[in-house]
Image 1 (tube, rainbow, N blue to C red):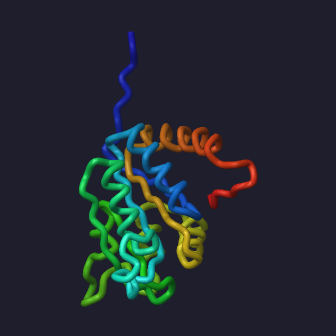
Image 2 (cartoon, rainbow, N blue to C red):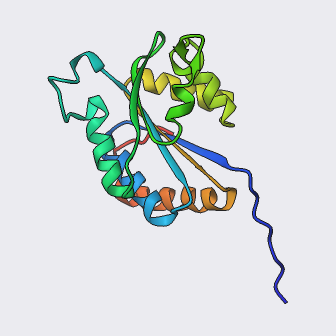
Length: 175
C-alpha cells in the first residue's frame, strides 16, 4: 500500500543571480524542460534611454525576452521601471505585475525600497534579498522561479548538478 502525499497549494520561490545572460538562459532552458508548472521571471539592470539605438542587445532586456519566449514557447511580458537605488530595471515574466503595481502614481518597483520589499514579500530572506539588490546594481541578472516546494527542490538539484558541468572550473556563479 502506497501512502498518498498531499501536494501543497502554496507556492514558494527559488531565486538566483547570474553574472551573464548566457548562463541565465541556460538555466531558464533547464527549468522549462524539467517543469512546466513553474513560473519564471527575470530582472536585470538596463539603460532604457539607449534601448532604441541598442535594439536587440542584451542590456535592453528585449533580447532576453525574445530568447525566453522561444525557450518557454510562451509570450513573455517585458517592461521597465526606474528605481533610484539601482537605475533602470527590466522585468520579464509573471512577476511583472507585482513590480509594476501602481502605488499612488508610482510603480512599486520604482520606490526606493520597492524591489527589496517585493523580494522579502515573496519569501526571500533578508540576506539573500540584500545580496540580490547589490548584484542587480552591479549588472547581474536575477532569476525568480515560483512553484510548488517539491518542484523547486528538484529544479535546484538539477540546476546545481547541470550547471556545475556547464561552467568552467575557474568561472564563478554568484549564489
